[in-house]
Image (tube, rainbow, N blue to C red; front, top):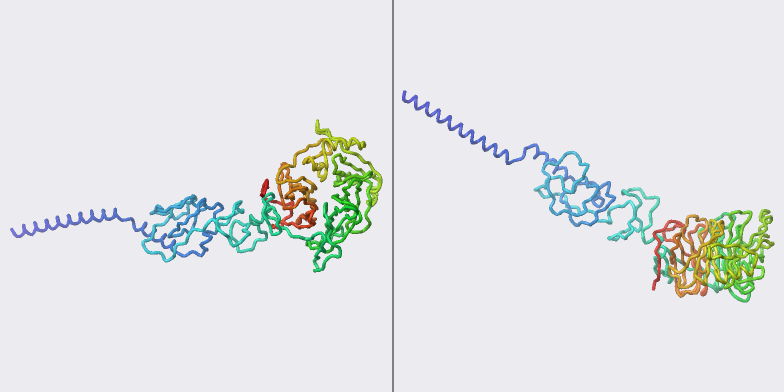
Length: 546
């Protein structure tokens, strides 16, 4: 019996010990469970780590098929150990050196990108080397920067597309250094200070035969003292054109020279269309395609010249008693009633207006328009109220010129406004021909260290913002321009005393000008291939290069 009690006691003690051990074991498991993440979360982290360690097929320099339009404000030299497969649309402004860690990444893409990586760092070394972030110069942009890139590039012409493409672009935007920036000058190989985006080449020099496109030279030598000029397109429509240039040589040694170009701007021929005249200064174009050449001498006259040689030169009736005539402009808004304006480069040089006989004009006998009598008037300015009138009193016209507009040279007409320049007063006058009022302003600006001379607007460019001037009697004469806001800019300058012969090709892609003294004729083009009336970057108001 006693043995039975001992066995029962031992059994009870064994059961108690087992219970204690079980409780202790359960408590330990619970504590261990609290110390470790769930197996589901652990499996999820392992899945993400495996996915991010997969190699990418996208070139590392692009970083994404949709690169950011807005590059980081500061370049970063830091790299990520595990590059993300979904880079942020808007990169962080500042790099982070100790990224925080998310233990439970979402399987759904976030609509708000985070600066923090979304995977746990792996304890195992990565088989893929770290890839640095692209620099600012590698990030494509939707538009070219206004400032040069910090890193050199292998291409001078960035792509116009926002996203990288394997297809070639049909049109490529020029880089900054090729864009036309009127007023920002640089020294080119011809010792010319040209506006940024321009280049020039020498075509002819006075006293020398002109080199032609066939390798031969012209029979005639390029004329001395080249002055006013214009360009005429071939009426046959083959794209060829001529550059007509006055020769301001004294004692009947002057005349009009003609240089013929093909549609590509290559020189085909050079010849004289008028000879035996004296001091042919500037002139103007008629609506029917002839050149009016003005003699600048005490008893000078105005000649009409056919640049294509279809008929001999005519002496017009616009000069009448003679004068130091400079330039001619035409108001042809009514083709049946063209109006001609003539400047006279004297202190008391009257400014003339000639209205031809309407019957002759309407009959289409243009050869007789400027050789037949018409209406001749003279300009009288009233500065007290900025109005003007036309009179047939020559004395009144001379008095007005000597008091209000001395030595008028360059003349141009556009959209109802008559422009002319007083060389002595260094003023630009703008007459509203529909309201009989006018305004005047100084031309002192840009780098006019001489006086404004000839005045030219771009033909067939109604939206062009610039009026171009040549310069006379300057230490560093050049080509200057005025914009619609009244600001003046230097397009070109050089160590010469006078520029002249300013004209543009029919497509406005070539600018021509001469240096009066040494007789050099230059062709200037834009490096971006555009017309001078086309888009250009912000104008730079230029004061001096020296």
